[in-house]
Length: 98
Image 1: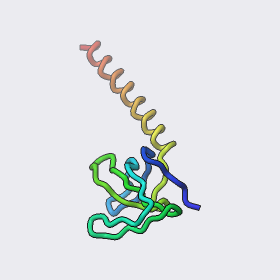
Image 2: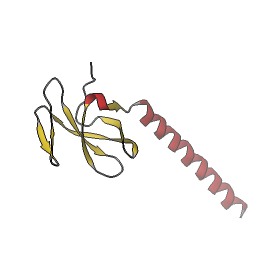
Image 3: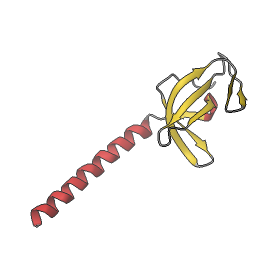
Image 4: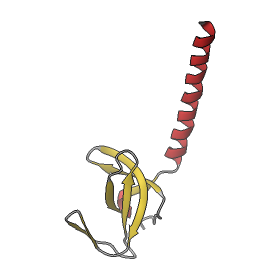
């Protein structure tokens, strides 16, 4: 069974450019025409409208094409915070030495 997602969920999917992440902005429960294509959707098999984190591009995907970003997101935030602390420490040492 495909996982169900909700508006606001942070997800990832594979595109021609590689792995992309974004937030679900709308859940379509009926077939929709979007950018010249018909995207079939139903209550049992919805289409998710997802806004890319990097480009603000909107994409439509079925549930089996996307995966929830939970562990990766928190790991990335922790890693970024660690790098920020290290950079701050290096800058402080350089300033103190000068």
